[in-house]
Length: 442
Ligand code: CTP
Image 1 (tube, rainbow, N blue to C red):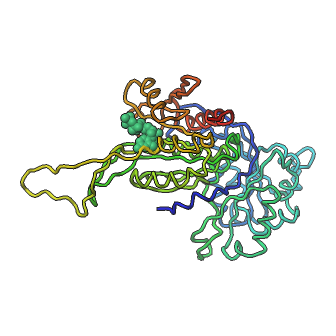
Image 2 (image 1 turned 135 degrees about the vertical axis):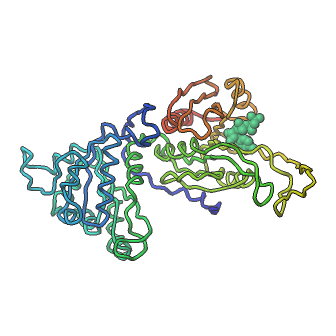
Image 3 (image 1 turned 45 degrees about the vertical axis):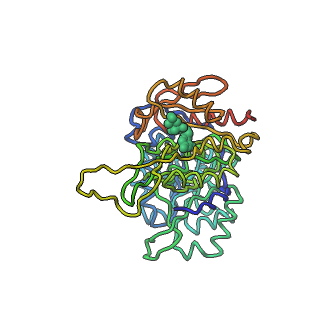
């Protein structure tokens, strides 16, 4: 379990242009490729420099193309030692550029043409030498040259460093990374782990799907910039004895999708997650909990600093009054054990009735998983919980699935978010919340 005081750190730097996000409300292929269509119409320059991680760039190229992007690969001389331009051309479907003296462009200015045509440039892998060149504004090859020539206010530059742990830790590299950050470059990673050289430590390039997630985030409008968002997700588990407990069918998928969308929208996100095995969205602070009491403790610790609280968790209403110290055994008499329950605290109601929410400093959003009379139950629940916005859905129709439909109930009335993937619904909900928060006070 993560330390609860981790949520006190709200220091995630959000770098990246606030460009319009393409909408892809298609349900087709929703399960086949989670990123399908997310980069439709985007033109990405994928730069490769010398490093063993070039093989991951091949996978990244494929993922970018599958996400709908047009990918223009540019390789340094060193990169060509690790992977061939032929392979990258086959994967990207575009001729690869390797030289600033490439005579194909009519004007013979590949660095200008490529940087002007790009919506973003991602260099993966970015070697120590390449980062040093960037930091010093040197441009001995086409790739650093086009990075230098890019219109920085319009074309974000993302680096995915990859190098040996000693090279990464070297003060010169660290100085260069800081300089690159100061110059408006976004640095993704690095990861810790086993390296191609056989050593273990920091310096591994992020995996291709992680880089894709970061690139998609760059293009999202920053509707929640400066907001700290606290989210609960998943079920809780109320122990009966050391091996049994009471839980429910919540998968946590909606809450995790909202956490990702909120982070993409520029928020600093803390996700308090019940027992689920979903991967943590990139850039999100996660606190794992088990029971409703654990969840309450985590939430109360973080609610002091949050601006928005979104309670998607399916919290158990009751827990066994006593957790048996040892497994409850059958004694052969056929007698069924009796169990007393106590009510769990209502986390959302407690936060919503707290001083910060009442003072208009914390905007609370509740969820309602109903099985019938959606609108009427949602309106009643909204009043009972004391939240400005309640999001209702049919629980049995959505638990564990990748799609859903939502009904938003607030002072404005009822807003329907029709059937779509949870990814799309999460983006729409974040937009709806951002709109309400910007004009909201208690
Ligand atoms: N909730 C909470 N703490 C609880 C119970 C619910 O924070 N102990 C939150 C949920 O995260 C959700 C909202 O309250 O945002 C509604 O949860 P739901 O289970 O639908 O409603 P209940 O309050 O449990 O009411 P009922 O079971 O009677 O429908």
